[in-house]
Image 1: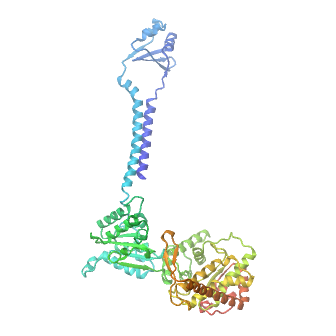
Image 2: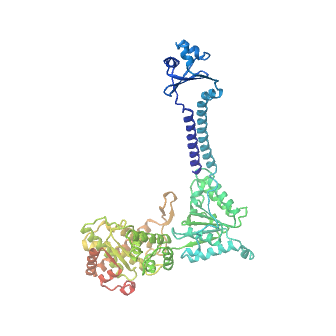
Image 3: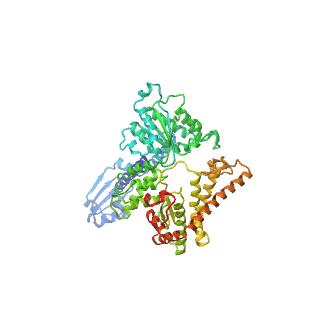
Length: 614
């Protein structure tokens, strides 16, 4: 791009200079006349001076103006004027100067316009030739220089202190840093430096950030590329770029080569994606050779990141290539609090803001989600004209990240507001009364995203395993809105469609994936396989008979029916409390946890739902 701009500037300057030359050569303002008119002016006495240069006669008039005329070659001026009837005395009275014609002026006047035109054409042809040549060179260099580099002396390095949470992952990677800093300490024991580290985890858990932190801590050059950058329209470009990247890395060893989203080129071979000549497979083959082939690869550590380790080729995962596989889990409550502190470090938070409370409200949030939360809160505070970020903006940003922005422009009539209020209170009432359900934090009938209203429930602690009874109660909470509409209005609306979809999927997983059906026993039904050509679609390989399929349907129906009956029973037993909370919700539109507990006035079977556990 810079070269193209430079060529355009040079071409424009050349055209300006050429135009100036042409303007200079055509600057002669002397008018041209014929020889007869000039002879007549001489006879009348209007001419005061004559200059003859070759075949051109230049006359100066009494008023100071000039004119020139061409005569026939070989004839003298006196003979020509005599033929036109000019008196000899008149002719002798006018001073006449005879100049020798310049050969240079003659040839210049004859050839200069043609030469300038030819030079202009040559300049245009040269310009376009350079452009085409540049494109050819670019095409030939597709396989080189695709990697990006962060030097070891770069400013604003990312360190481990800038990465909150992921304690186990940082501990594993600290060994890589020690290998790069003091390799002799390990080589004295016969230990070899790991050749590859694979970072696995959900999107936003900090894989790329951790790789930068390793480079920052070790103080070595850091080369990085995305998996998709290896593949281009030309055959062999991916493999060539791999060779070039590792060649540059070996020259600057010890160093780190980071490949983000390696599943773009590291998918399992022989999966039907083009056969043995598929460009991705050739690129993967070259990566395998560079990591552990015939040539030594000392001092170069490859770190790769992916959220799809299940699709990677087994040869890529074996020891000797990716010796370390590090799983990055979503942050727990302590990690979330630490991440919020890092992202809130340079933001003006109001006094009394509890980052612990935010961490409790954000189970399942990744590091990227938490960063987005703090950014949205800062933007919201600026829009409201505040000087600091208060807890109101932070809590509202949680809902914005989870559900989307508020849609106050979506006006609902009074009947729709009433249905939405009872629907959301139905969810909240069931969650309040069941012993294992998550405590209610907020209820709102203000539309957000695609939801007409919402109920926020968050667990009191991070859990990695859940019992069958907890899932059964979750089914009742999901169907609480459906049950409330049916009991209060005697009809149902489309507002419960998302709840029914979620309840059906949960019941299906309980029966088919988690063995939580007494009738079917501890067995998994249906193997799920990714359909690569269909994006995220999952194909279920049916490994059971029609008789078992009927039992599965019956068990799913039984779970959903029992959950719905349980929800209806709770609503019928606490109908007056639901009516009261719904009226308050319609009036205020939003109820926080304390306001909900004050309005319902019913003790909960779950200690976490009691007012003294706010």
